[in-house]
Length: 70
Image (cartoon, rainbow, N blue to C red; front, side, top):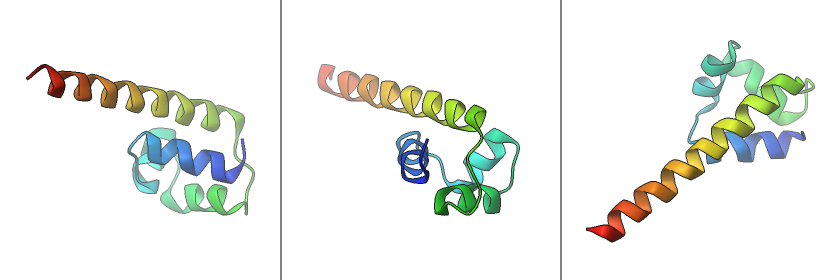
């Protein structure tokens, strides 16, 4: 996962760098370093963020569907 892909997934999940860090057990600074390419992104961190992004997109779709039903 590239830094840009990680950032996009984090944003799709609706997470700040601090919130992503809390989810992953690291600091906001570490997340920022991953996103700027200073440090490599651990595979497990990338997988967790991708799952969070999928969950965020699914929640958004459900919300849009619920809004249309009103």
